[in-house]
Image (cartoon, rainbow, N blue to C red; front, side, top):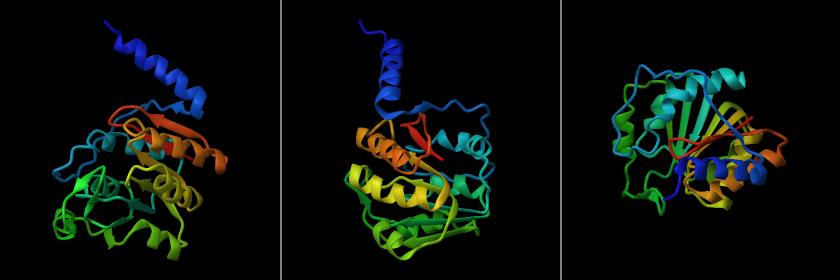
Length: 202
């Protein structure tokens, strides 16, 4: 019978060596006052560490952009802490999240009570090709391939003070891309290993 605690600890040590990841341990958990109900539970739990990430990284809270909005749960969480949040998504899902059909209207309705959120229906590739804005924080939660995560995340790391990446624990390709982005930009890679994993690069 395996000791899951030892296995997890051993994997953490190996990942520290392989990816240069630093285990992120929040010092405080703060639940945002305004959240939405969502069909997806994938991001639930991470909303509680956003304030800690902001304090830890020392970033400002004027603007955030999110790549991969889905039903808007994480977007709403971000809107509690940032003055302006831009959400970029094709709003049809993907092979990893699932294919939903067009959910733009549903997500817009979910977020109707958040005047500081702007939704843009676009592929991240088109957005980063034409946009050169800078943000305090970028959140990447798109299709979980290495190439897509690296391309979107590198743009994010180059256009923000702090970039966060969901599913670093669920998808090895995401973690590998995040580690490579941190090396490329001479930033540190912190990893919160709960809730499917959240990579933090700043």
